[in-house]
Length: 117
Image 1 (tube, helix red, strand yellow):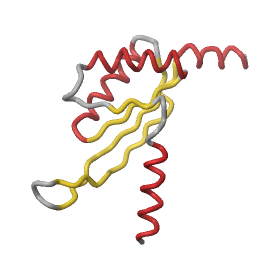
Image 2 (cartoon, helix red, strand yellow; image 1 turned 135 degrees about the vertical axis):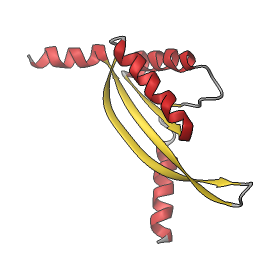
Image 3 (tube, rainbow, N blue to C red; image 1 turned 30 degrees about the vertical axis):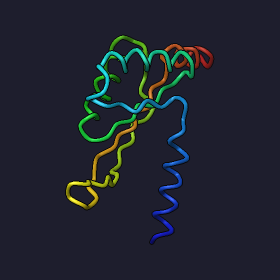
Image 4 (spheres, rainbow, N blue to C red; image 1 turned 90 degrees about the horizontal axis):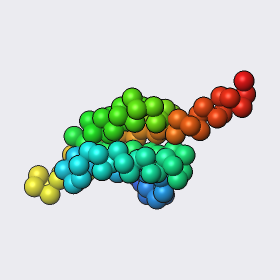
């Protein structure tokens, strides 16, 4: 059992170094900071991965909806999971919801569609 947990932790650590991932917080920066950052990442990498824990998930959904409604992005993938976070005040791990939402730059999607039509 420990080997499985260790393997999952290694995957998460290796996966956390993606250059096109934005880890969203609902307390550190304003909403449109993340919207503008996602626009820049999509221009640079053609896709962006928004990631959040707990209460910040609503912020990720809002960012994605703003980008989609403005015709800038298309949803590629949404993944959810739970992670154990150590709560120092209680002295035990607490499970928090985690979400990943991957968005494609709409221009790239349209180019792919036109290429095959």
